[in-house]
Length: 248
Image (tube, rainbow, N blue to C red):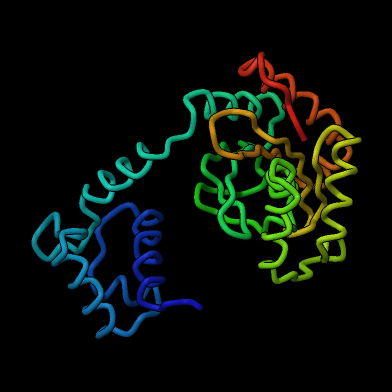
């Protein structure tokens, strides 16, 4: 169930992240398609709590540094291992494709770190994006790290939705995918959730949490290169974690 007021606060912050400059109440209302009265009430409440301010009188509202302080505090309490970003950045550099680190969030995987490809045609992703755990190689690379009982508990919560003809639509299909990945040596996907997107994923043996890492890009460029991409990923992971085995 979507709580509209909560969703509006998040949409407002995303709006400022895109805009990168103050906005008046009228500009916010017009750009987001909100009623002026609702915009006034929402912005006024957030400003009164100290999360928005007016850098210049009547010059529009902008988020205060309080957001950054909060985000840093939260991140410091559950940080990614220091080597994680460097590892992902090297994989992105060597493959030329968007690379992301994911963690389990209910029946989804949420991206905790993203290094986007510099190529004009690429997979557009950002930190905080979520993908279904069952309809993505990055999700199955996390499922593979869980016990059978833990996986069954997740399967019971999934509302399987067919995003494309290649979307796995049952727990049995996912379990078969996990067995095939074990034999193949890596998890892979092709347009399961996002059209024309091919991905390669591995479990990421770094830190205490089950993490996975994915390299994804357009099928025209990445589909046939999946074994090569997986080999690069394994080489980099072993460089950063030489004493850890990459378990699928």
